[in-house]
Length: 117
Image (cartoon, rainbow, N blue to C red; front, side, top):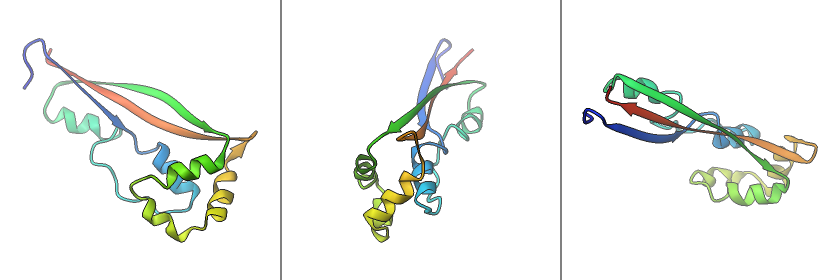
């Protein structure tokens, strides 16, 4: 329940962002889904609130050094799954996505705004 003039903001990720790109590029299974995303957040919030609006933030990550990307990937919570992939194989799989020397990775972020009126 919101106050009469109340607003509630919540930011979340989408299902087709950085993680999905990396898992696809490395031929890994999809992995465990997130519980609250841009794709399902509206339906979840509409169960409790009448006025829900979403603001998308369109962005991408442009990587020129695949080695830096691999270092980042190895810090991810699901990085243990990558132990079976040799670094040179990972480099080759990711480099396949380079166009003009750049790997363009989609980022999918947004904010839900709930108002009481």
